[in-house]
Image (tube, rainbow, N blue to C red):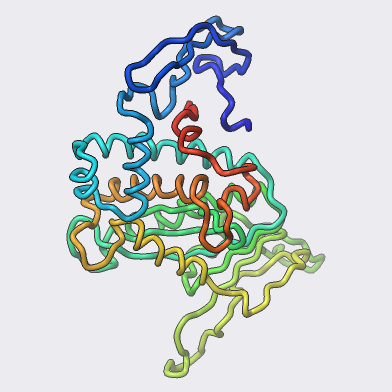
Length: 335
């Protein structure tokens, strides 16, 4: 698997050979490698999660696994008898794998992608009105595989949605068929339309018509009853932005929903303590919440088997051939 291939940390060459073994106190025998291109010597843990760590890998994985199964930070400190800052440092290093795995995912091409977009709110630091809170988390999830494309937290404003659209823009470049389905939130489609549009010449006088790029569809399911509203009422299902005339694939109204995203929030509130309601385990800062979300992103997408599909999401999406073990994740080069 190319993702796990050992490379020289200096020149990124894969033309390397083992030079000599050495013994560590807690991790057994490890190997020193030499690059045949630049002749640099380096350890097998260079630029990996395990670089510089003395705690046994099995114990670190027990802590991270417990944290992504719903154990709070203070509870983990008491149970495993590690300092709070030690556990936080492991989570920070583990969350750095998010960027490596995300970029690896984007080197693949996809035949058809159906993405559900949704948002959830949780308390961060102290109680404020929801529109002022930085505890909003935005989710983009692949419907078929349950692969999470985006899981970002912050204030529910244009900046947060632009992060999601930047991800969608990269996905668009890897597929010719993308459908975005949301529950009433129009900012996904508005911002996507700003960056992914075409000018279609019809042969008629006037300016060319602006549409979404060929193969891109956006559908909205408006929640709630419109009966009590005065004036023009929104339909339950909408395609609010003009689509390219060559975009042929249609979506049935019964398929326009974000039910799988809603189910994900339910699971996240059980397994991620910062999202648990009516407790004092909320995140004390937005970066702290994002750190734990990135840890959960790695475990959800590449390690843990999804309870519905019975597959690891990255495997179901076709990104990797099999689930990754904790040992492989910990020894994956991050640079």
